[in-house]
Image (cartoon, rainbow, N blue to C red; front, side, top):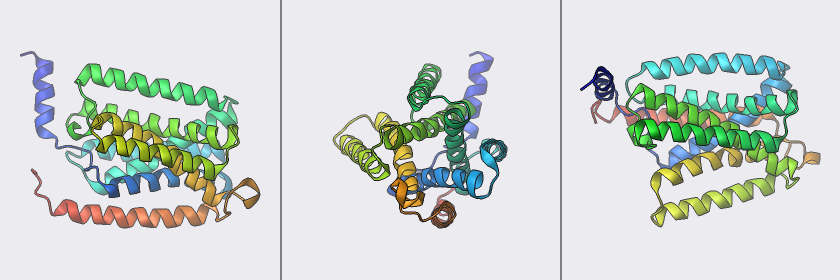
Length: 260
């Protein structure tokens, strides 16, 4: 047995799975997080007046801090995990927005590019670990692949959602219905016996444009096809719901023995 194998096995022993159980509430918070990623980015950049560049730098720093805490934990800690998800949602949104709005890259190009980046991440992850299952995020390497994949799913979802609702001019409601219908089909495929890992990651990608379309629908001006509720109101309400859910996750987590 070589030294690399020894280190890898020791790492697997000392870490518990760093990802929560995938339940209905998991998907609810994930969708809320994607919506907040869309609305919070717009709120900070436009309403607060920080601008796209400053907002991007600030959120990137906060995400880096959150991920440092996340990687230092040896097990799933609800508030750390979901804080990282919310922040990576915002950063993923801002990456796409910067490329499109600041650099003039087309939504077709960003959608394809992020899809390729995600595919390459999965290929390297699988070649390295022989699995893409989120039930075995028990080493630092797997956790690194996991969060990199999550970042690309959010960036891809942002570009794909904007592509459907804005570039193709289908509108936010139609985009939400389309993505919601595809998510429903993926769910049915899962219960019909389709591969669990594949359906999870497809669902994870699709919930991003679904949540973003809902966010745009709620916040955009009526003249642009939205309800005009405002980014500050929607962000605040959804964050409160996320906090309540994370509180529930924390209570449930404390009821589970540390080694379970």
